[in-house]
Length: 277
Ligand code: C2E
Ligand code: MG
Ligand code: MG
Ligand code: MG
Image: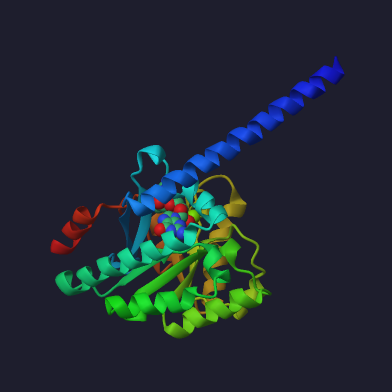
């Protein structure tokens, strides 16, 4: 009867929560081990200038080889890292290794582009973060202009004091700031003027649907492009998978592009091959 059903429902529900909690604890344990036992690595995704198809930047993406996280990408474990505070240590690990990689590209391969590093929105509320970035730049002797930090649009909170303070401190360091997954958040367009941002990264979902029937998404790419022009921001299109998409984005005036059509994320050795030709 209904009463029993209700009770079963409840039991099912709590079981599901318990499963999810233990799943989270499991991931957390793996992440701690990954940090202390060196199971993290980076892959490198080239970003191309739409005008001459040259590599102008390389985005680093985090991978975890811990056996317990086998097959899972950052979309799966970063949220757990954020919920447990481990993300701060992970972000510093990524920045440290990305700057070291950039140093090698500059010294041994004459690369004069940027390295693009994803950081968690958590860092916008972490008062230590700007100084930590400054110290790592100094340690690796990297000019701030060759570093772009990517934060998802949803992490930007215009009326949050620490958030704006951190963004301004980073901007004053000289690193550039990109709004990642742009178009998926709720940035009131007139707020853009308050952010010290340099770049908008058009979310992959909009690029993917460029030639679909969904007219609204098609228009979104045009809107973002126009918005960027208005606020003097660079535009990077993410998730370019076909030649037709790239041609369209070029005609629209998009500055830089990345995606499987241009290059998959690469292992270090494969990235180096691109600089040898
Ligand atoms: P993101 O920064 O927007 O990175 C783009 C994601 O889309 C990457 O997935 C990339 O492999 C994938 N991608 C790029 N081009 C294409 C394409 O043409 N087609 C398709 N289907 N996918 C494409 P990934 O590496 O799984 O990263 C997912 C997200 O996790 C990233 O989104 C970023 O928000 C976060 N993330 C990645 N690395 C780090 C990191 O080192 N630190 C932090 N805090 N977050 C990271
Ligand atoms: Mg990114
Ligand atoms: Mg993105
Ligand atoms: Mg993303």
